[in-house]
Image (cartoon, rainbow, N blue to C red; front, side, top):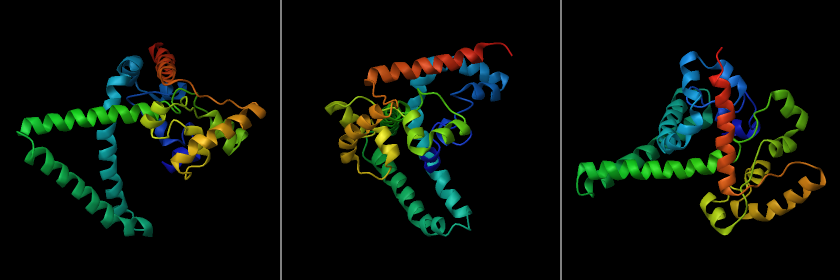
Length: 236
């Protein structure tokens, strides 16, 4: 995630936009895609919403892989120190979850159904939060990012979602993504106050400060996916 914050939406550097063979986010992705992948991604704006429900499963799997990497990286002292705590924490999580699902539910099928439904609903909710903040915007080359500079680069490649009591609650403060990227360690309850100041600075220096309503953000995201999908539909 540090890589994403350090080079947001920068092709070849931001790991969050490396989603082939399932999703393509730039013309370069389309060029890199093989024939089978191109046939798939030309429909990506249609299968995107159902697919993102799997995000919780993907992140859980990546957490296990990350802890395994801790153990394998003998040169990283921090990883070695954290490995035992992370491994025990993950093991306890799945043991307790399994005990709840299959020990307290009426039956195995009920427990399995509860697990799948809860994980998919949670995954969809998380995905809506994380995909609206950067993905509808153009992906940039390293030279473009360097030309902007770090702060302006974050503003050019990041989008907020319009303030509101319900939106602030649903997004957990991450609808103030511009401010989060400018100050990653700023407590979330301060992001809203910071957003008013950042918006004034952007207006003063003629920088884009994007904060559409949530429904418009979803529409922009699907429209961007469709634009890239059209490139994949063009015969090579």
